[in-house]
Image 1 (cartoon, one colour):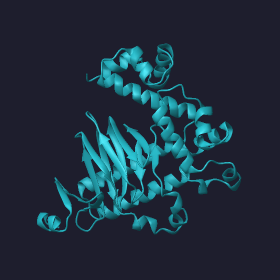
Image 2 (cartoon, rainbow, N blue to C red):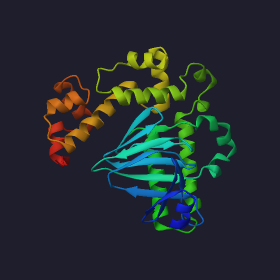
Image 3 (tube, rainbow, N blue to C red):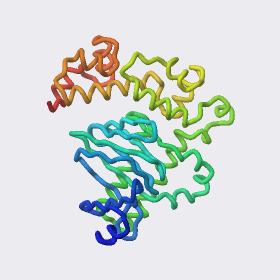
Image 4 (tube, rainbow, N blue to C red):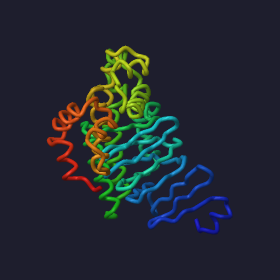
Length: 300
């Protein structure tokens, strides 16, 4: 569609190096390369996208730094290596700050959603999937996305079909790791709904700086600590303790890299109860002290 036709239709079109971002109100009409229904954007420019929605599935893979997504009333802090998958027609906004980069995958889902076994679980795919660093699912899905991006970038023959092959595999991994239909009947009787676990993850993301406990989050979710803990581990691949620790470490690493704030402040701001605990956990997880990490990776 030409610039003038966009204007005549009351649609805003912003030109990018390889296409348009076409908007009508908050509705985005994703433009794709010829004979395809996939677009993969790379960006390392700080940017803010206001609330919008589109028919495409959107996947954010953060390469460096942090991308913040607001999805309805939930905030997802997508750190380096982490992945956020949004279903079609989901209102969302995002902010990417300085020293950050990401791949954004956009594709129309009809081909995948038409698969019979995926049709059977479609109601469970109608929610965001926030995939944390370090889980088996994260490693596998990240590898698939990077392979799809490589095919897209090289423009290999039948690249659109080849990319969809990796997206199909991604949905198989999602089902195997996160969806309750893959659990046994006995497990399902004692599991927390996936939407509740997602809400609990958002609660942790927004309160990790506080002295948060398993009982606090289980109460927020409305389940006993036993059932909540069991379901949280089953659906995310992390125990509550490990997930909380990882979020605090990610926040601490960002501060260490991007500022010269004292270690005591970094420990407090990232939710660790004391500098001694911070140093111990950091060394256990990263193999060095916070001071050493800053000396190696700091950019301030």
